[in-house]
Amino acid sequence: RTPLEVMAACSRRCTNRVMIIGSGSSHHAALAAEYLIEHIARVPVAVALASEFMYGKPIARPGDVFIVVSSSGETVDAVESLRRIKSTKHGGSVLTVAVVNEAESTVARESDAVIHVGVGDERGVASTKVFSSTIVAFVLLAVALGEQCGVLSAAEKIRIVEMLEEIPDK
Image 1 (cartoon, helix red, strand yellow):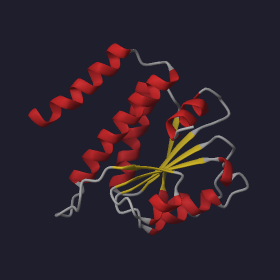
Image 2 (cartoon, one colour):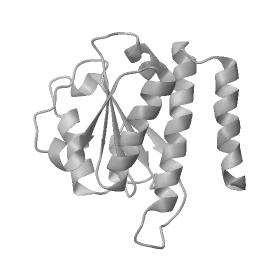
Image 3 (cartoon, helix red, strand yellow):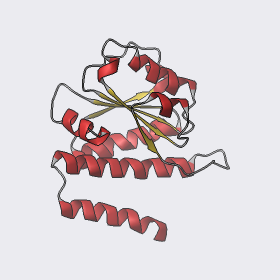
């Protein structure tokens, strides 16, 4: 099964959950993703700050989905959060998904699936290019998940995709 099919199956059972973990701009993208996925796909989501999550004792149950967001895929808190999840009793029966700008990063290599935003290097301090692309990736993930779960009509999907297509013109 694809990661999307696994996530859709998880969303149908109240015992499973989606947890999104990130720091800095990635944490802000995770907060936006929480809203997008819950609003569009009607799947419950929790968000954690990677710098705090890595020191906790995560609860991972079979079928849970953990999404680790990291632009570089190399930040210590993101890598350690992912490793913390994998080391739990049920770490082998959860789905870990990396949302990264660097496809060959540690977070990407150690995750079960990767959403690669692939926008290249940031040239300034602010992470606008990666942040914006990560949000678009989460919109598309929410649309696909909503469609997979049967809660998003074809007309709603088309409307959302058309709005995304209009962004460069604005």
